[in-house]
Length: 319
Ligand code: CA
Image 1 (cartoon, rainbow, N blue to C red):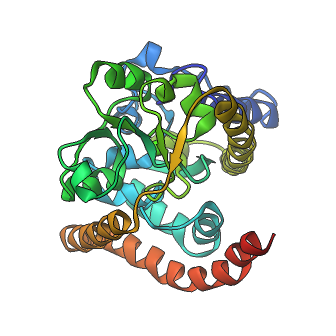
Image 2: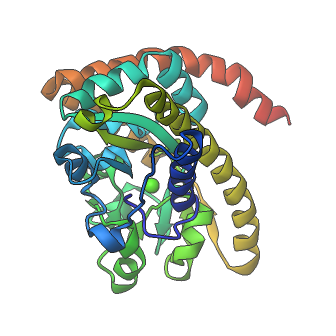
């Protein structure tokens, strides 16, 4: 897995999946979980699974946009779908078929297997009043969002989860986004960077289990189904656990610390959104397959937005 041992939600999600597969298969399939402490390549899961060095790995698809830009959109898209919308797209709106199409080109089978829920926009040492405050700011922010902030003059860096605190403390980065209160509190970012921004960039990051396709294809049908069902359960369970733990962690965290919760100013969000739209167009031109995924997600989201507005958004307002 990409995650250091003990990472809340991430760690237990992987072990839960492995345990469920072993139990459901009555011990016919056993999965050994290694963390970066052992394999030393937190962002190398894609390559290790593709080559067969590991037959299976748990990671975030968007770490591999350099290998294949089409992998990015399976984790999350800035200003894109919420977890509910994403699940609808994955399981009923053609998402899984596109996931198969992209990963088959790399001899990998992929399953959605864990969702963080909506992520917070990150920790900043200084308050952001306008887009000029962001110029030259070094921030750990992976995936597409990293390219978006780069378009507006920030300097995005991709640092493995285990090295974030030290990087912030040493000033290698000025700001950091990781996930939400339950994960962030443990890493202690609030001690150095007290401005905690609400999210726009990862409206529900989906994680994935990647399996070497040559290995997967040799498995008996019932084991394939066990893996499929256990992955779906892992996705649901991590989403539920993330919502629960973040709810509790936020209450604890704000009691104990002087955290300044902020939403980016409207004009900053407008610039992010415009940069994001430009970026999606550029990627679609460069990679037709990525374009197919962008269009599939957009076509669904255009309709889902209205449904979400008259259901979830309306209800949240009136409650
Ligand atoms: Ca994140």
